[in-house]
Image 1 (tube, rainbow, N blue to C red):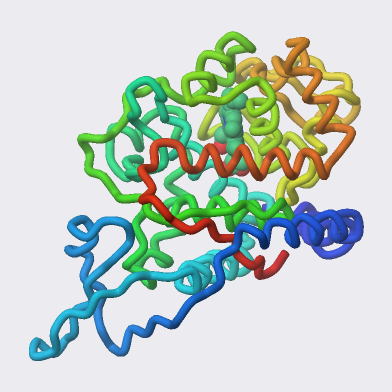
Image 2: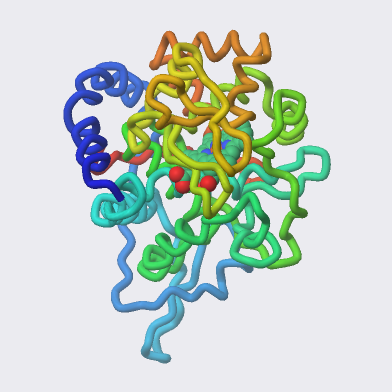
Length: 355
Ligand code: HEM
C-alpha cells in the first residue's frame, strides 16, 4: 500500500525499534533459550517424495517418504527442530519479499489467521482450537469473523507445497509465531504435533469475539477458552499490529502508527489519546481526536472502560518488557488450545531471520 507508510514501518524495523528493544529482546531470547531443543541430526529428502497418507496413521509428526523408484522401500521421516526452522525461514523470507501488501507486510494477517484458528476453542467440550485447521473448509471459512483470511491462507500455500510434510494446523501456527517474531515481537515458544481434521470438525459460527460488544462479551468469549482478565488484556495488545478493512470486517484503519512492528503502543494510545466516535457510514468505531487516522473498536475501548481490565492496560502501557513476556506466554497458550500433544513433545524457539 502507501509506500510512505511502508518506508516508515521499515525505518522503524531497522533503526529506532531495535535500539529501544535490543537489550530486553536479547535478554528475553537468552532466557527463552532455556526452552529450546538442540537441533538433532539431519533430514534429507534424497529425491524422495513425502507420503502424506502415513501422517494420520502414524500421528505426532511422522511421515513416510516414497521414492519415485518403486523398488525403493518407503522411508520413515520424522521432522526435527531444524526442519521446522527451515519452514520458519521460508515464511520469514516470503514476508520480506511480499511487501507489496497492506502496510508493507503479510505479518498482521498471519497473526490473525493463527488466532482465529485457535480462538474457536471451547474448554467445556474440548472442541475447536488450533488442532485441525478446519478454516480450510466452508462453512468455517465463510464465517463473518474470518473474512479476509483467505489472503493469509493463500500466502502460505507455496510454503505448504515446498514442505508437504507439515500439517496445515502446524503451519498456520508456525506462521503466527514467525510473524510475531519477524515484526520485532518477543520469542514465542512452539510445539509441533497438530493434526489436520476434516470438515466435520468445523466449529459453529459465533465463537470468536464480536467487535461491537464490550467487557461482558469479552469475558464470556475468552473465559470459554480458559483465559483470565490479565490474559485477555495481554492478548488484545496484538492490535498494535495490522488494520481493519472495510471490505472484511466493515471497520476501517489501523490502531497504531507502526502496524508492522509489535510494541505496547496500543495500550499507550488507549490511555493517552482522546477517542471520539468516528462520523461515517460504517459500523460504530472510535477515532483519535488529534489525527483522526487511528481507530479503536468498541471492544478495544471496553478494556479501558472496565476497571479490572484497565489496571492491566496501565501495566502494559508502562512496561514494554512486561508486555512482551506476558504476550509471549499467553500467545503460546492460545496457539496450543485443544492440541493433544504427545507426552514429551519438545518446546522449540526459532531463530528470527530478518528481525
Ligand atoms: C478482543 C477481541 C477481539 C476483537 C473483537 C477483534 C476484532 C478484530 C477486527 C474487527 C479486526 C479487523 C479485521 C479486518 O477488517 O481485516 C481485527 C484485526 C486483527 N486482529 Fe483482532 N480482535 C480481537 C482479538 C484479537 C486477538 C486476541 C488477536 C491476536 C492475539 C488479534 C489480532 C488481530 C490482528 C493482528 C489484526 C490485523 C489483521 C490485518 O491487518 O489484516 N485480535 N481484529
